[in-house]
Image 1 (cartoon, rainbow, N blue to C red):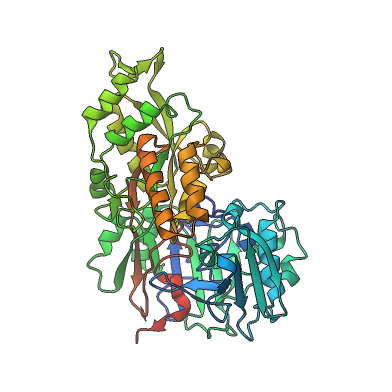
Image 2 (spheres, rainbow, N blue to C red):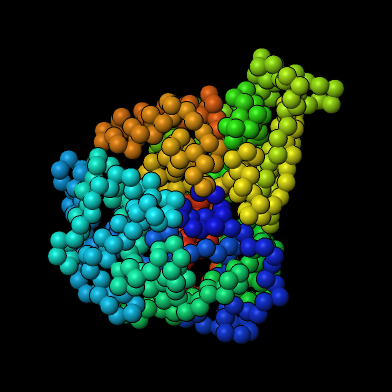
Length: 529
């Protein structure tokens, strides 16, 4: 998913301007380090919505809600609102969950199976503006059996379905009375989770208090504040001053806290990659020879070393090189000679200015990146520099997402995506032609029948070998005709005051900072002293 608004498919849009002039995000003053019961975290972006019906928290770790299942520190599925992992029958077409006893929403009403049915039915309703509904494509029917049992019937066996049921559950008695797209539930949510939203000052902060009646036990951290600070430097400054307890930071700024005895740095591996979308309809970026040449012209290793300060890996496709599904022998070093040969053979001839042209059209296109995102800016500038060595002129421009969105179908974008778990989770929405131009899904409008077939096989297949072969084929097709230039997979960096124990990191998706990070399990933290 791109780092944009966390609506539906969920990503975050960088907030315009810094919040340096704001008061401390707590109750006045620099209270971030005041006690182990209060935590103030600086993050670069905020959600558009807090409703799971529109996609908030769909990958888990929402502090307001719980799913039927959750993930532990090692990303293994574990029971949450369900008593146990599902009973799977009918050759993988039926999943039965039994709900945990005694769970209540934060308004005191009990959780029932009807709430689960309502949640999934509403997400799947064509009238609901949830761009992630294709992730539940396999669901044919969901029904309640009594108050404590939920049965999902699938149209086809979907090997990864259980992991989809980390989707947060909402209360029908509140959300069912509202329009899911416009109702107040989007900003005033009620859930079963460890924290309750107490305030949301758009562009400044969200505050939460501990749910003392939480079924998992009352959290020791009683107050949690997420301060929205778009500017990386301002976030680091406020962390250093004690105004924040912790923050998500780019690698170069996280490194400045390396020798700070009062703070600890956390590095989380991720599926989060940076890539340039190359829209099929663009007469230059959509040309297969241009795409292949750019894929070979980029110096991924240098991007990792210089831009990420080593905190990441080269990206040769959407899956990280250490992922078990990563195809062997698709790594591609920079090869400017081969890139130039591909362009020569395709009729892109070098002009006097060093820029190639074909049939009177210069090899030139615009690449947008979101304003204020230094890491993306650096990727975009490095990409343009490498492209120019092959004779392709990439014009780099910054803009807000409001400006970029209408242009995505025609212009290149320095995008960010990546989902943890099964490869279906990230690849289907990124590449399947049926989702071309559907919001931030398939931004490149990529259309490759062999890739579609591989995605469908991977989604519907039950035999691990068949699925492995399908995703292997997909990755090799992306080498032949890349709809994106994949650049780097990024490790996520966090710095946090060293006043708590039991902090860990998970392998993280693209969306991070707000829900992911060492605070993914803040409800389990214990005071260090």
